[in-house]
Image (cartoon, rainbow, N blue to C red; front, side, top):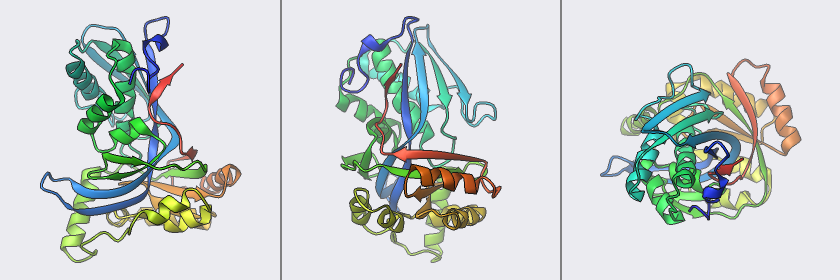
Length: 317
């Protein structure tokens, strides 16, 4: 993948460093099936990569070290040790390539942590691309995709980007050709939600009979068709089985969804496991107007105007 994705070692800067970035994602469709024997849920999802990025810079050093700036850097939300997927990505790539895991790594975060936007997965994908270039491992696209799947269910899509249907636990990807741009407002509502806790709440609600035992999101066909056509049809087709358990854990998110609709969104949903609420707009101008209207509600700690689809992890600079 040194040539296919990261651009090869020639992208190393004069100071010996290399930087890659990777985008956030929105699950415009997320159907959650039963719990599998491996304790993951069977998923059918449609991923959309959007223009909100984290970057990872790597430079030569002895051993591994990790620093973080930006979103989550000061409140302990993002660890700087082996608990971080960036650290794990470095160790995994080093083992795969048979090289020493020697690098200083810095993550500059714009994607909020625990927000349902796959920020940690984006960091891991960017680390794989940056370190492939720094270490000259010449990993193939398939190599890096395989390593990404070992790191987490969303990491392969963070590497791929664009639009894709994900199955299995989300790591089995089928790219979707969706050239039409879509414009969104991401409203980060309050503190983060733990993904495992939202899945556990879904299981509890299903077991208690408070939600249907099977997915109610339906097939992703309508979303896939709408991604290339009418934004209003896309807004009407948005679906997420994790929205109900996220609302059960955080009832205030209902107000955030209602505010999106009242302010003119064509459709809205909780992104992934939340608590980010994604609102679809007609175009870029409408998205900015939507964000401006929502800024006065006091319901969101941050608002981001983004568009998609965008490419996955790649070198920058």
